[in-house]
Every structure is written in structure tokens, then in C-alpha cells.
Amino acid sequence: MRLNATGLMLYIFMMCTGIACAVESETETLDCNDPLHAAPDAIKRTLGPLYRKNPPIEKLDAAHLKLRELVSGATNCRLHVQSPGSGSDRNLVREWISLHDWLSRLADFVYLESIGKARVDWEIEYADFADTYEFEA
Image (cartoon, rainbow, N blue to C red; front, side, top):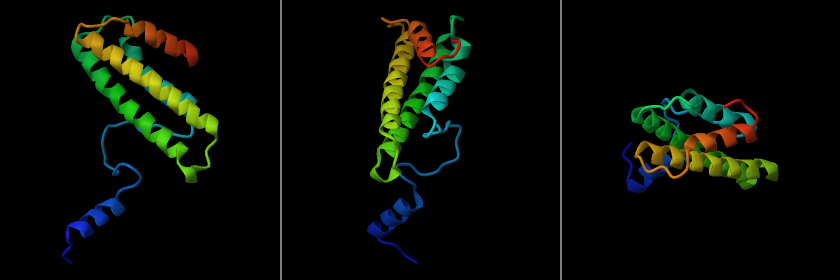
């Protein structure tokens, strides 16, 4: 069977779910129905080992990339729970919006630290996040 450009695009779209195609990777998937555990746990796994240890730039770079993936995941979760057919509680949407903002701030502060332009200590922001989401930094 030969597909024209429109047919090929339609086929690719049908093979993809939602916004992104399902691809095997090391990217962590967030549980969109459990933001109070999913995102904070992922952030703790990413930044916890670096906290108060004066990590080298390479580790901060890796953490920044991981945090950017989590920002993307938080965006996808927000879009999913906010979609008309999801039937999600408005509070769930608000929580994902808040988490997205926290993740973006953390990612930006870690990045700035990694290039030597930190104006805000990422560790202070991380400690505030841990305090807010009630886990030990």
C-alpha cells in the first residue's frame, strides 16, 4: 500500500497517543493522577543525591536535563487532566500547574548554577520544595 503525504501523516498521528508517540526510553513517566507523590518523588530522586554535596558541573548538567524532562511530563499531565474528556477535579489541574512552576524554577536554578551564573541557590529552592511537599531534603 502506498500512502501520499496526507495519508502518511494521518497514519503517524493514529499511531501516536495524545501529544507524544510512545517511545521506549529512560524518561520517567509521571502518574498524572497522583501529583502529590509522583513529581516530588521524582525531584527527590534527581536532586536529593546532590543536595548539600557541592556537586560537580557534570552532575548539575545531568540534573538539569532530568528536571527539563520532568517539566515536560508535568506539562503533559496538566494538559491531560485539563482536557474536557478527562473529568478531572479542578484541584488536580491546579496542583499540576503549581508543580510545573516549581519544576521550572528548580530546573532554571540548577542550570544557572551549572554555568556559574547562579543568583538564587538551587539548594534553598529545593529545601523549600521539600518542606512544602513534606519530605526530607
